[in-house]
Image (cartoon, rainbow, N blue to C red; front, side, top):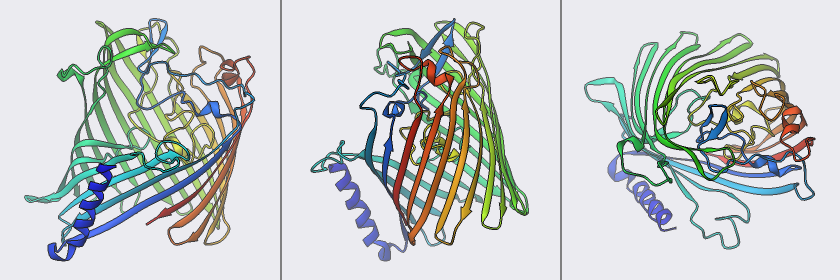
Length: 454
């Protein structure tokens, strides 16, 4: 709570000093209140998580997370649940009159369920996250170049790395071309028993570069490369809290190409990525060889928009061949796809499968949808998803299920919207395999939110 009070005092002082300092101050916020009901709360346990790694090594399966849970897809008598949740984000940008330099700070308050820490009776727990703290400025010797230093939005491909990181990033625009180079650091502190050894191998360093060309009609192509030395980690047998293998060193290189385009009523977006690198486990080397492709077409006729999309993330079909063929990501949110049950459309922190894979078995997804703009304030939409793993899981088949989704959005007033969506998942054989009795249940879930953005 002291951190929050200090931060607010600094922000208020800066805002009051604006006229004297001849600077511009902008406040922005995203105040989100969400409510959810589900018939199957076990699916709130993540099967896959961005921050964890999944390895098929020598015929066995390992993860970097202790006791990684496998949800029971058979409903119990007390599995239905209703919750309320709040997540408030605020950020302030301070810049000079010529926009040559700006400083940005951003905070998140909450991310808490009603009755939980920070949102219980009294509400006095310290639930505070520093999201952004960076300085962005124009280089004095090149007005087309800018340098961003600090905790910043990374801004690379949304299906690889879309969250924040501390580091340094150089960007430059030259006509239709844009470039960037970046260095970022993370520290997992997962050596041995989980305590840092203060060794340089304990660091996770990422180096990134991209090249963008924007055509005169607004369409664009982006090529990017990201290299990450994951540092040393400990891996565990799935579901175990005892270290099975230690001194794991993971080096990953992503090569990617993405594009966006619009031609009259048709718009398209697509991404293709190849993952290479190697994992060293106690002196034994495993080569990475994986890929992801995603594409989406949208066609608009009058007030109607029709969507067709698909995603494929490769899985590891043979954990004994010395190759790791499952695709991995850094930190993403799959809520962009619109799935309610599997990918948690209205949230970014508690979905059944936060990344586009299930363990090391990859993911394949086909979806279609339609949206109708009823009037200036109201939008209705519906989608269908066919969820599968890319490879047959060790626990069963590859079909996760068929998901049917409907939703509506209404603008109450400027900046204030109300949204609701509901999904029904017809469970497939892959969910049957992880149920307590070999026969999973279908899942219904509905989410609603009141969101104020300014």
